Length: 334
Image (cartoon, rainbow, N blue to C red; front, side):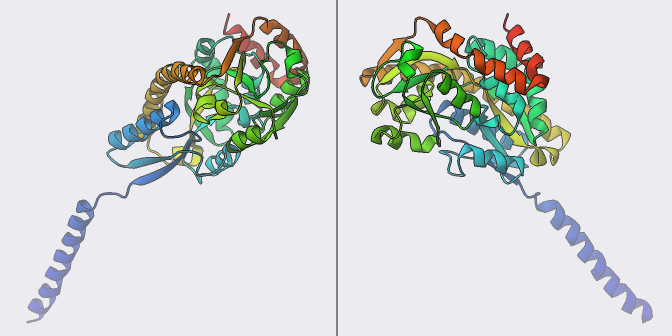
């Protein structure tokens, strides 16, 4: 009798334990849902590439990671998004290097006017050993740069007249991204720099709070700025790389296998973005021309470049530790 009393509960315990094992096997691990920041509308080249990145990561990790992209800066403007990604509140983002300077001083080199000769030169530099050094600097601030996007060449546009010489900038109130180098750039040309959120530019141009801004063709067109600022002048003073960055905390939580998948997906996204960018730039240029925008070539860019020399001198004096990296960026383009 004693044996029967003991064996019955023992069998129940065995069955219960087996059921628990089967249940654990049957229930898949919960997906790690990543939130991603993007300033652009969904149809923008960067946005399309980010969606491809998210899809590839979800597929290749078999749903272990499910990135979701939030477009149109609905999660905050870029300076806020940078901080959110650094502290892990956001998992990934596409950041322009312009506003990154106050946080990662080395990236200010990328914001020096005319530091790159062309977008092709920029890609060559950033895809190589010099670009790896910028990635290292970002990682020190908890941002893991997995690939580099392009953003074309930025030029000046304004509401009143074309800019053909530095004298044409004198007295103009020009919106710039939040970086002291851009403020100094406009100051050296005799204008009045106005740091301002991207979302505020259209209304500020329309109401006369500012006279102009500077950006690339796709941003100028997609934002509608061409509707109120009809003069686009090809100064091409900035050629800024952008990163597809992952929060270091999110990155460190990944297995080595998943890190490889995410990095490869980011590189595929960069290849797609660069191709789509070139196509979109041509389309945007034609759209603004059709809308009556006056696009003018700047015949003497050297006059603008000469005005920038004090910026290089000040940068070398205030960042002696970065002077050799400036030279390496320039040498890599020769």
